[in-house]
Length: 92
Image (cartoon, rainbow, N blue to C red; front, side):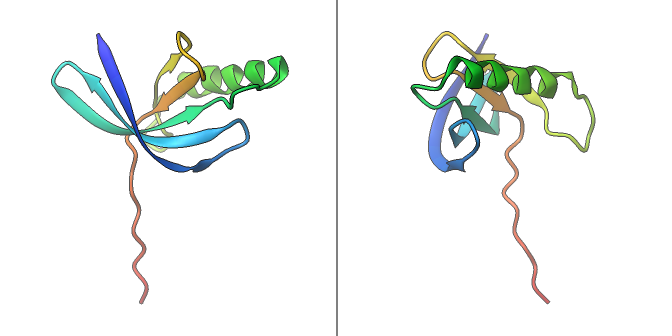
């Protein structure tokens, strides 16, 4: 069984907001990004959003973000992307 929680907004994308989150599976906790479908989205956008999730779910590579799952039981629909990496830039 898994659980997730949403944190602060990271920004927005084509289909809606993206949030910082935590994905919990047993005792393991992983920082993740959670993409959401905006409320009132058209059926066409909903289909495209879920197609994007389906495509993301097919990738298994160290250089591609892993998708943990799609949450359709609640609104807005969400999909959870693995391992949120907070980048810092070194300026020389």
